[in-house]
Length: 278
Length: 263
Image (cartoon, rainbow over all chains, first blue to last red):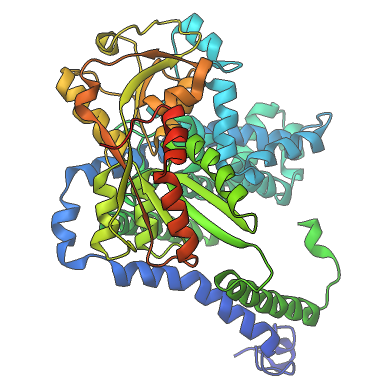
């Protein structure tokens, strides 16, 4: 084992000299935990287990799930393509008004999603600031299309990716960038070969966050993209619609969404945490 | 994040949390049993097509009952029925069809037999500055024309589906909205070329929409049903509301918003 002298440097265990965890912390922590876990237990206990197989076999459920996975993954791709450069600008470039830009990035994060949907309509709707030009010049209409869903999801998920990547870039040592520059690498080459690989864990966790946010998106989607089976009715919207008529169906859809999202997150997390550790 | 860096003693936080819990418990019980002297509250769940008509009824009701605060909650009848079944603290439920009301009576939640107090009929509305000019129901099938309906579970959606089938319209809508006022909003915002709403919604929107009469709409009349709920915290006020809506005065208000009289 380790020599006695080194032991002191280790963090003390929970029952070290500091004593047992104080109840002032334990009690709220337990309340917090049950608040998080009880609804999931409720979902599992009310699930229509007996009719589960036949309900799951309904092609409408799979179609909805497919639409959700397709749009959330596409939105995450858009976030990566657009958000990573924005994060780099915020972390590394000398741009004027950086604080203002960062505050702007945060807006969709604090905006209620339904307000985001209304805002998207005023920008990209048929009467919108940009939307009316898209319509009259190119005949492109975004509301009520699958592209509209991706746009809404990208809008709400982008801040998560930008913040995560910016954080990763800031904590990464920028001296490697300087070093690459002294070897004659252009800034673009430096970004691709040095900066980005170093920030990869941050990019990955940002992408996971963005994906989860996009998958759960409801308010902006139903406001901006409407709700129609096959084109815009993603899982969360289907859950909401099912609530009007069939509570069991709503629970089933919720379960599917729960299993898929938690499953994907666990898979990715294991992959990436081992990747980071290596 | 910076906000969280202030120096707050853990004890203060815990105390504040406990106080919040206690305050929550107190306010919860005070909602269930209003203390004497405080205004009574009547909560009316109403189909969204009733938005304007019931706002008008509310004024009359509050004039007759100065001590009462009426809260009209509007949404799709199916949403409201599910909420009532789930135990929502409503005193009155007014739906836009029989089926959603049946959902509530089946659970034994109606305080009396529901009353039919009005009927409604579908119509097609278009944005006021219509560029694609939907002039008849046939235009819905033209390429590039988009229209909105309610979700099939909502009364307006069920009626729309029945009527479109009757008229042999094949074109699919671009969106199924959760309630009829959401359809109306998509039209007035100019996001769709047309929407199927009730005559009363078209009436409420006034000059914001153009109206295209639908042939055979009279064959798919919907009925508006109302009942006081057995879970009502204010059972007497709930019955007063039902009585007012069914009275000659209430019927005049409903007629002025485009509703048809009950048979």
